[in-house]
Image (cartoon, rainbow, N blue to C red; front, top):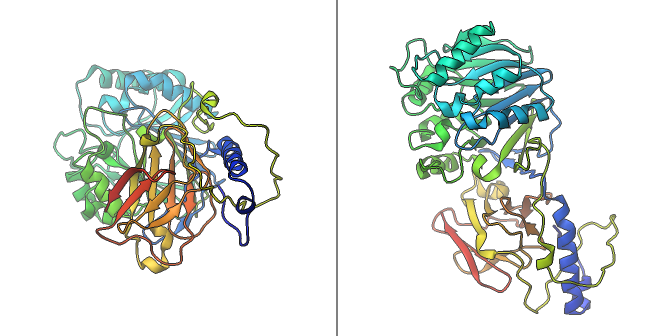
Length: 467
């Protein structure tokens, strides 16, 4: 990604053909660094949490399809919250091993549904477990009965979660059970899910299982602290989770939804997405982003995403290969010295080549109305694009336009690989593999009634989104 320095550029004095060669050469060079998606996270107050974080706490929201599984690692302490469906057991075990984990200190079964405890038998068979925390709601499924039998057979300490309990694993971590209350919500398994708040320094994670509706309302009135920078969204983003009132108490900056691609339940529902967006949360989804890692040093956190490839460890970056046979063949181009910063590229007047399936690029999220004063929070305005196709797409010369049809931003030479996202912020910042900045000094998007229009390098409308 490249920004324009003052003065004339090489492309303003060179031939169009040479300019095109430069664009393509720089694009090819850029593809080598798209593996880690380091996305700046802007919270409701416009705070920026650093994208790179070498903190001691790592939380992996594992990609287990239509199910839930979160792995918390803090030094030598490991917590596994749920383990996906039965068929995901081997995957969960593989991911845990790939991260160097040899023991589970706390195994949490938020509730007995198979998409949360299905993989636990594999976990119990492959790792020593220090203790088990269960919702304690009776369930007659063979799967749940086998789970309890295995826990008993292995003499693993077993505890039923009750609101207000604290779990002491490390003095630097505060783990509080926020739900279910001692007097349960009838016999509904989802509503009685275990809700945990894990805090490290000033950074809080809220894990909600499949809780929603009645449980969220009770939590709002409970008096317990709910505010959390990172929220594991309840019930896979269903219609009955993430109410605006509940989110107003949580104030999430980052929301993670665990779900399967094209699942039959319609998750995530638009109502939940709208509520999360309205709360100012940046949304990540395992169906779209793969395994999601949030790492914290206790005062800030960073987020990375990674698609699963051939059973590799969740943190190992993967870049889908560019189909080189589909690219134009050019003579070798001189190497650009690594010390040069802010290389500028002015696009030639000749039509730019279309590489990849342009129609696969679409708006996946927008935030026109920045939290607080728009003029003081220009990066609170943003639009996000996702490549939902199977081809890597060159965005060179593409444009963003507003409701008036006027171009507000022209994309530099950058590839967007399958499954990846790029966020375009209105203000200034450090460009990276998943963040671009318009460099504006005043708001770009109207708070209501505006339209973001995406056009390719030849002026064809690819997608548009209103807010």
